[in-house]
Length: 245
Image (cartoon, rainbow, N blue to C red; front, top):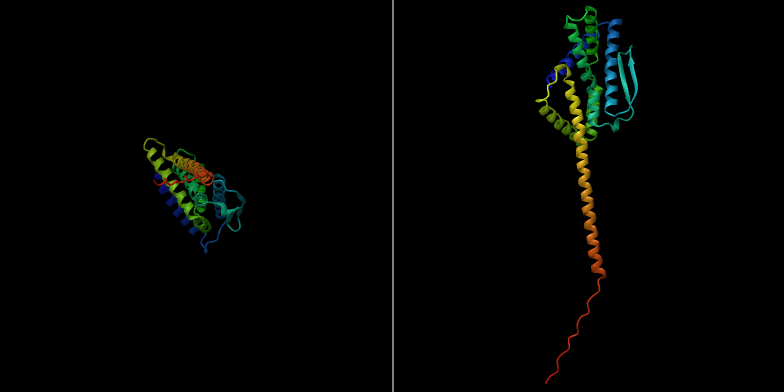
């Protein structure tokens, strides 16, 4: 499990190198390079858009510019995004493109496919690598979302770590092929929501019993106060002195 984590830094560094050589200021961009670039940028922004929908956010306009070789996804209300939403949205291109580039590499190296398919896979892999790296704005938004609510952001990280630990222990008994290893991350997401709503339920139960106990205590105190204020007072017995002999 998690052997594919090494895939992400490799794709990240490869994407930076590809962008450096292709978008060198001294190099003139040909039509083919621009098409490759805009395809990679489209996949990059599409990854943001899909992850926003998955995490429950509301994306706005989707833009990709061929001339500027850039793109953007509008977010209607960034202030309502949690750290985990912003983090997953920011690294979504790296996560999605890593698997796409890996499958393209497998097709390119496999002799079972036709040469035309292998060439298309190589071209797509280069295009994917162009759009694999998160932008500066993506990284900035992740830090901004964490600073908006550090306490809840830390709580979310704790839930993810707890879910990851459970899935890791379960992976000793569950054998999944390497090319389906992304299913582990889906299980981590499911575990995150299970623990999230489990803790919410426990908190509500505790609050319910606390409120019930406090109501009982207040009713007891009010009844004691009522008895103290309105209970009739006993008359004092008059002491009669005995007569002298």
